[in-house]
Image 1: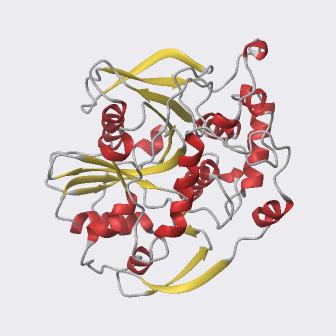
Image 2 (image 1 turned 30 degrees about the vertical axis):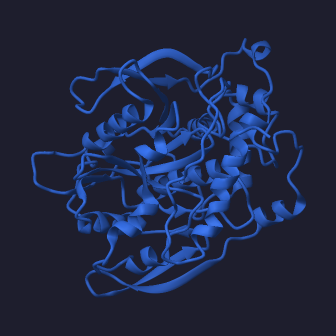
Length: 394
């Protein structure tokens, strides 16, 4: 078995260990990958040889006025019509251990078709009033506001930036396996629906299921969006094959939801994770005035789909610590919100140990420096929405 696959499985197995205690948090994973040249930015792969990526580089650095680093490459949404003979089918390294299966087991399909349990409860709002709260088994709202308050309380945080508080945290279901890419797509969809941005009408009240997302991706390929993915994967309908950034991009573009996919890599002077930090910092700082003494900034920006070799996550923020280090703040579909996070929703309670709770949402240099290449997918914002992206006081 390729070196990437055991590590990917370790990431998923870590969920059961981590959540045996309601107060535990995901560890800083120590697994490593052997970088190989692949042909697409899906799970378990390197993106240096991505066939749908062209040579246009977008420069990026911390100060948005004068970008300098040639490290961010945009990817195109449509596949050339004459590329068929140049594309080969991918294997287990790129698509995971079930790369060659025709259909997933019937028990798993039934699990994914099963209607998600919906519960309703009363939550005390910050103003003291009771608010009716509706939640699903693996989908949690109001997580970002909790993390905002925890960053305010954490004395080691110098400054922090967050995306819209309307994004939901969505986690994998027990025994479902490696559907991380689908869960991250669902998290972006939660933002689209809650903020009612163009394209929200394509989705119903509940999140589309994994099987429904597969149908959407297949339909996007039919329309010509990143359609070489069908040749490379052999099709994903009803399978457990890994998906990645091009599939997410194809889905959204096929529904008229504008987005931009980019590849971030090393430069002569910088490691890939440092370029990534600068890119994400710029993304959040575009909506904030740094001329204030505010410690935490809450924006209405969309969350970001984030892919590295072996796993994908959703970026919801960025922070700088007093020691000068930086962290991405992420929602990892492998992990559910801890009981501490759930208890803090809708309250103004102060945590005795905010850093412990935040640990599961932080991904710093120790985690990211193992990777040479990253991919991100940003939802595009209309001019009307841009005017409403400014930071608000948490």
